[in-house]
Image (cartoon, rainbow, N blue to C red; front, top):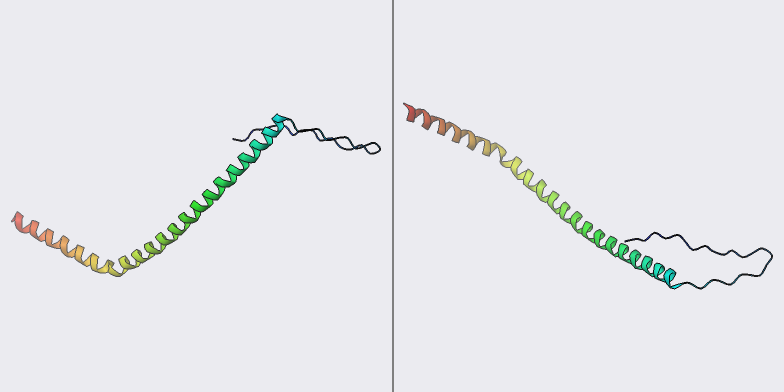
Amino acid sequence: MWKETSPAPIDTPRANGPTPMAKPVTDDEWRSIVDRIETTRDIFRQHRELRDVLARREAETQQLRIRNAELEEILRKFAPTLLNIATSMGLAAKNEKTEAAS
């Protein structure tokens, strides 16, 4: 994905002499530069895509939390009734079992 290369040495101008001419970029150096630019572009594209996916997931998570809170409230409201029904059904089943055994 990312090729590690050593940076090309940079000629610094001498303090009391003429400014040296810049060396032309070789084909290998040019390819290396272009490869790095393409890799960087790909990384930024992937980052943008991942950020979009994360934003969608966060929105979905928020909706699920809201729905979960609604369901918990419904269960809290009906829990006593459900407990009474379950107790009544258990007692009825116990009575039937006792009557069938006698």
